[in-house]
Length: 343
Ligand SMILES: [Cu+2]
Image (tube, rainbow, N blue to C red; front, side, top):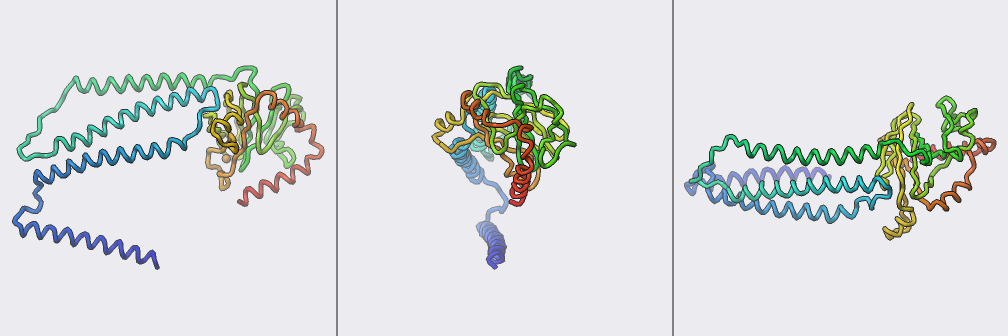
């Protein structure tokens, strides 16, 4: 009922405006003025509106910045992220400068040069010098941005160093599993054909490299100032491992292994202190819409000191070492999955 009333009110308002315009037109023609003639004073008025819009618009932009900038990500918690942030800010500074200058020109000139009846437009068909300026300057700026961007990209996509800690992030609808490569720092083979309730990653029990591999759920720990190499896999559809605080993201594609590496430089506790928020946690999210519980596909990342990390890791048992009671764990796990899916 309310909806119908609102629609009726809108329709009536449109009619009312139409009639007001008609009244205004009739009044003008009664005064003997030509109805559609645009006078200098009309133009001056439009010029003033343009100028007012410029200030209102900039005030709105400023307000948006004041509200939104504090909601952006905190400082980068990874080494390469510092460079990425710098690149992002550099791009934004250029964009903002061009944005402000062009808008001032656009609206201030509309005000300054509003139409006057005795004015005649200058005939100005071509100017080589001007074209040179607006071609060469953007070309130089773009080249600088691209060179900086390529440098950062090459650094990020270069192979990880040999002593990087190797982890697997395994994505499936709708959860993450993390596998540590153990003492040999090499992940054992796995095959989708070996996936069962008790062996969710399809790990190959005949591969010696996998004997010390450790599987963790819900949260995984990594040590500060050590390079971490992630090998990413997906079970059924494309997912994307997104770790925003480390400025890192890579797709997880079924049937292939993608890679990503970074070095964390701020522990979880240090970041909590910096943000004055003892509940803060780093997070791994899925950044590809992969199904109905995609929004809930996440895992906590804890960056520890090396000592705490080793202590935490030593409490974990290799997957194959606890394979015997795994049936019980598997059934708990499948109920969990159902619960998440039901949400
Ligand atoms: Cu996903």
